[in-house]
Length: 260
Image (cartoon, rainbow, N blue to C red; front, side, top):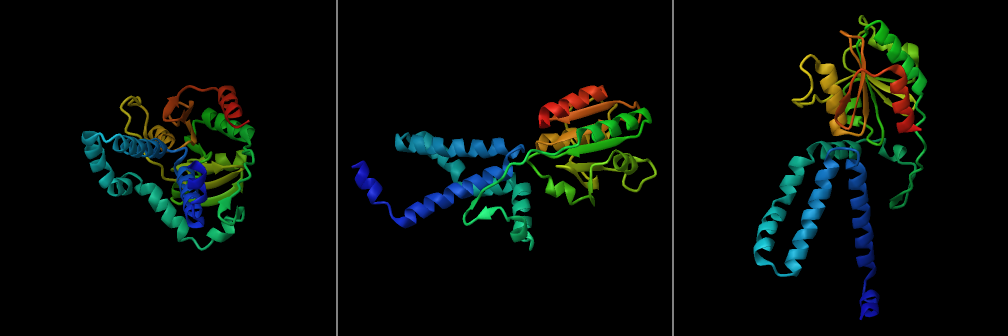
């Protein structure tokens, strides 16, 4: 019977399954590394649970879960509004074909090159800015490319340089407000606007710079490094947590462990 069922599959059915798998894979790639990944997994789990209780003819649970599923499209639009906006921006970009050279037919074969991050130059710049009490906020992107936040700033697209980082955050520089976003071995943008965390456990003496650092790491897999203008302290935020009073050696060890 199983063989009969397999041979009864049409070519269209196979194409349908393959296209659905690709769609699911692309959605996962879009939301991985962000807070939305947990919601995405939760929605899939809820849908599978609905199918199971429906198969076992559990009328009450089927009815209740069915009501959630029926309004699922509206819920998805509300919950995934930032991600949907990002997809539409990508689709509307005329350079999308150029940027997708590693796609072949219906599938994307990605070459996962290691991140060529110049850790020493970043750490030395933070150490010097801490000594001179120069406020700074540096965001290092990982899998999530932070395109929506890069777009809010001034494009730089320059190699990572100790002098360049210090120059950007010099108090008289027009770019010193906001964050610098680094991706790979490039400083992508400066003066970027980041989301601010509403966590109540962040000490009140910390300003918007620290709250923005926590905010971006709550919404992505990025790392945010903060140099305090008032105290000359170095801190970093990762996965929505703030780590304070970090030495240059401690910062270097953290980045080395994460990227190498």
